[in-house]
Length: 373
Image: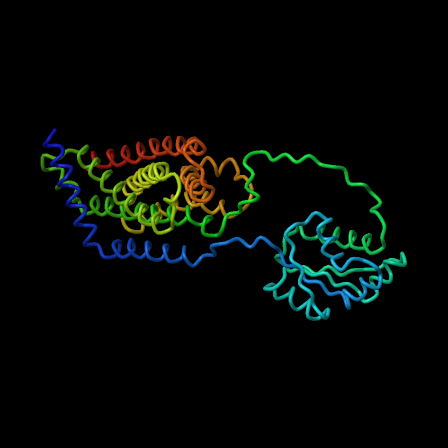
């Protein structure tokens, strides 16, 4: 037993020296930590909860006062339309409003009322309000603002809406996150952690492929070391390296602030997953180009769950079936929503199952490759 442990330790020491001498991968590892950590702190730390809406209605307060309507009738109309969190920005001319909507920095949409809007509404005559939308404005603003204009017209005319709105009983399916939206930092935190893991996957794959191409493994196997010792050393080296890098970026990005034990377990499983893919890529790649190709083929689907976090709604079933989904979901829920082990254990279980499958496949392919040498 002691001989096997000494052989594994000697191989790990050799791998550490090779990694330290490889300036490219050493530079990439350090750069990824610095770049991703710096990028995280440059991202917005808060969520803008209001949608600014530009309004042009000549002499709004004066006309409302003359008609006996409350000064905040426009705000009441927007609230009665069912849209909360809208911020009204007044513009003195149609041209200024159009310029502001086209620019998209101050407002996301605009309502351009004609000068005789209040007179025509009070007299029961038809009128037209121009709705201005930027090209990237949310689709939901169209019916919301149209309803706001109708509610404003009824308010000014002193009439009740022609249809009575029934009372609704609200029921939220699943966990209600509407009162706690995630910031851009919270959304991108899992992606940054997983990118670091993928960087170490690529480094391990390159190390394995280079040793196979240069037949360094043959020289190692001439010694009392066995194939099992070599596999154990690569596994430990890759997992510890990936876990250490992931732990550093997690510390920098604040991913360890909630459910410390759960996050550490998720990072450990993520390191094992990256090691398994690294062994698989290194065993199948014959040269640097081959490693890059295999790594990219693995990289793209593994990053999809991290990108899916940026879009609202429940991810599709095929996204939830990807190996990296469990890790991304655990990091998102623990650091973003403050969930604990009781809420995320199904995702940890799925991640652990994928670790067993991927690590088993990686070691099996590498073992078969070494036996043929």
